[in-house]
Amino acid sequence: METDLNALFTLLVIYRERGVSRAADRLNVKQPAVSNTLAKLRIHFNDPLFVRHARGLTPTSKTNEIMRRLAPALMEIQKVLQVA
Image (cartoon, rainbow, N blue to C red):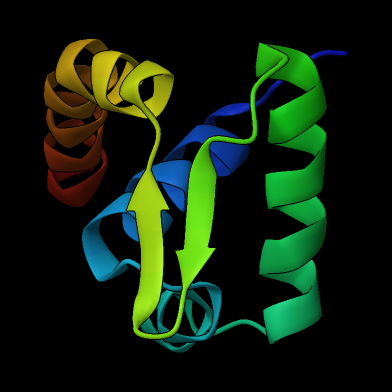
């Protein structure tokens, strides 16, 4: 599966918001679109990425590692795009 920057940015927003619905609101997209992206990312990374709880989602250790490496790069890309 080819993962694009939009999917990775969606993962970052889910991580920060700790919920698919909250991430969808933040991204201004419908919740099923975020759920579909998360499903594809779960397959790509071969990991559930988040564990669902009554109050939201908790990232797995793999997700924490991905975000540790990915978040700074995505923030730099976002800064570049805002300048353009």
